[in-house]
Length: 43
Image (cartoon, rainbow, N blue to C red; front, side):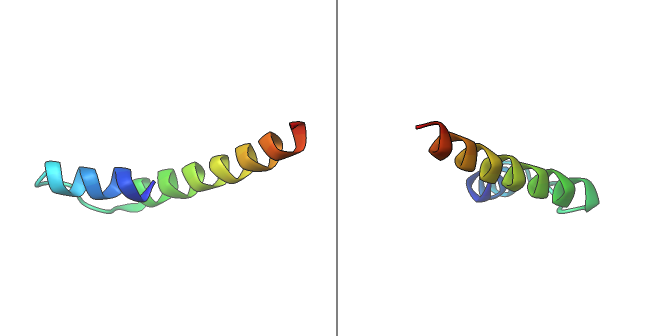
């Protein structure tokens, strides 16, 4: 998620961190955490 944020801020000059961006960042981190837990437990 950090890589996507940094790439967006470099490529798009009008990129701003707003409530929608923070919400999507939190959802992406939560999905990654859940996917990691499920992936480890299925192994």
